Image (cartoon, rainbow, N blue to C red; front, side, top):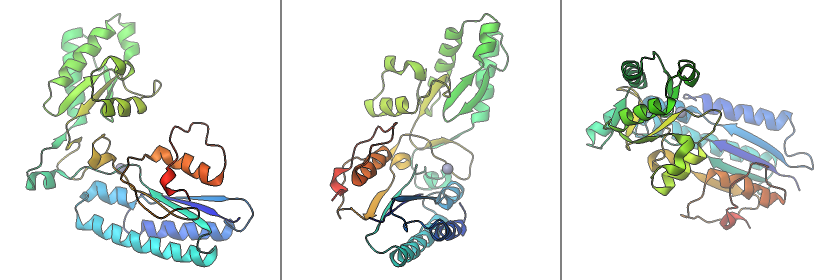
Length: 289
Ligand SMILES: [Zn+2]
């Protein structure tokens, strides 16, 4: 059987259209779908992200982007129908995240939320550590709601790392926009609602994660007065689309919670092949014919 697997995961106005043109060139020149083994085409549509960051999810700019994207997808599907034939390809569409409202929208609609500055928070924590422990610039970075400490310097100076981490946690926990702060490597000792605990655990990497993680209140993010960003667990940020269609797909819908990690095992099941080695998801059985 000839099939092509196509994935789209949701840059600016015409970049999406250019990406689809590249995809068509790949189908033509790599002769996708023309051999007797399954081919896989992954297409990243990122205008939605850039325009979403700049103008927010309720802007006319993002509306324009999605209307154009819809037309681009229509055009691409018609192209595939003509090139490889209806029902001969499996198409799936998803995203890696959504986004928070822009600060202006929150204010206008009296919604809770706001912004804070990572750089200011870093300065504040460094000043606190210097006054209490006599060490300068121990906070090296604040990224993705994680605090990275210069643990080598703490050790070299013979200071108490546990006491410094505790002081950072306490300083974060009193911030009005922070729900809680903890050491991510010791999350099992932290009282957190289960869904959050699982998400923080899934996001933890012993080699790359920060020394302290903090969870913020919904609607808050690291930013300024304009634009927005993503990176939290809340549904407005974490709820993503999952659309499958074409070869081997049973038409229908489900409101059951499914995850992006379910895509790989679902496709493996449809192709009757082994799941990838790091696969943690489950087959979305509702959509398999
Ligand atoms: Zn982004």
